[in-house]
Image (cartoon, rainbow, N blue to C red; front, top):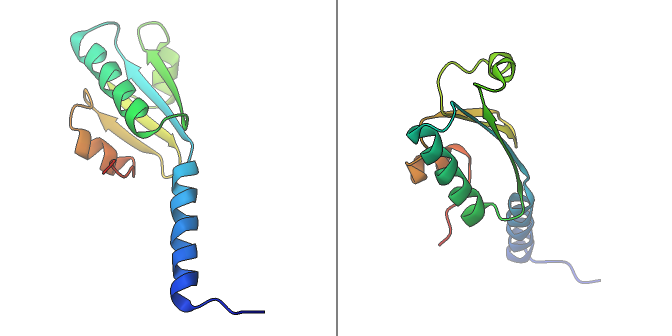
Length: 114
């Protein structure tokens, strides 16, 4: 039985890590206040991010705190729009309209497409 070389096993480990990273499932909640311009921009920006970088690997729930104030209270949401990345851990919160793509991708630990 042939033994794998160090470079071959490192390549295998890298490919496995890449595959695991691509398989991550993102659970996202976006808290907004009605259909204000900031809320609409945040929804549009987040949907674009999800479609371009997380195809088929995300669950997105948009919560209007005017309609469901108890959900915002339970999640300690003080400002809107606020995005909460529940999974993968660690939990992260982003405040604003999510227009700074680099900051959002970095904070969500998503590698931008080359």
